[in-house]
Length: 193
Image 1: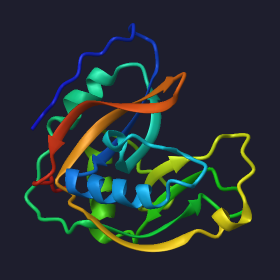
Image 2: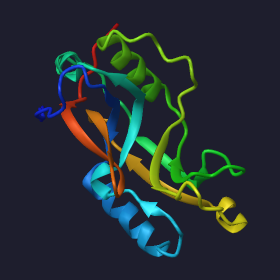
Image 3: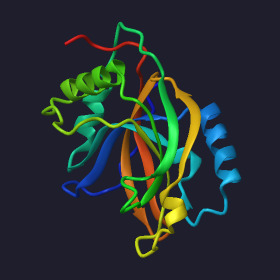
Image 4: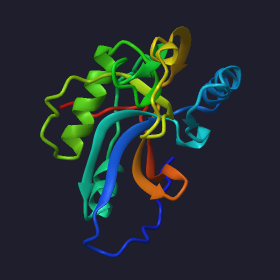
C-alpha cells in the first residue's frame, strides 16, 4: 500500500511534516454530509482529501526521504480498535476558537500506535498529552467568532479504522493550508518494542 511521492523542494529546504491516519472514504462522505448541514458556518472547510487524524504532530525536517524510508519499515502483529470521534466543537478552546474539529477519547491503541511510530522514526516521545482530534474547518485569523459558534458541541458517532499511516507535508498556498501525502503504509501490523 506504499504510495511514494516525488519531492520537489530543493535539498536543505525544510518541510513541515507530520504522521496521520488518512480518513477513510465512507467517513469522508459522512463528514461531507455533516458539513452540508452546517454550510452556514463562516469557516473554510478542509478539502475532504485532506482529512486526517494526527498521530505524530508537525515538525520541520530537511530530509523527508529519511523519514519515508523509516516509515516504510513499519509493520505490526496486533489488531487495533478503530478511533471514534464523538463530538464536534469549536476549538482548541471556546475562548479562542480557531477551528471546528471532531474530538474523541484517546484509547490505549492510539497511544500504542503513537509510541511505536515515534520508536520507528527514532523520535523522542512527545511529552504533550495526546488528544484525538479531526480538524474539519478553520476560521479566518481575523474573524471574531460569534458566541453561538463558540458553544458548538454536537454529538456524532464517527469511526475511523487505524489501518494505515501516512507521512504528510503541509503546503501553504494562496487559498490556504493544504496537505500532500509523501508516503502511505499499511498499519495492519505493528512492531513490538
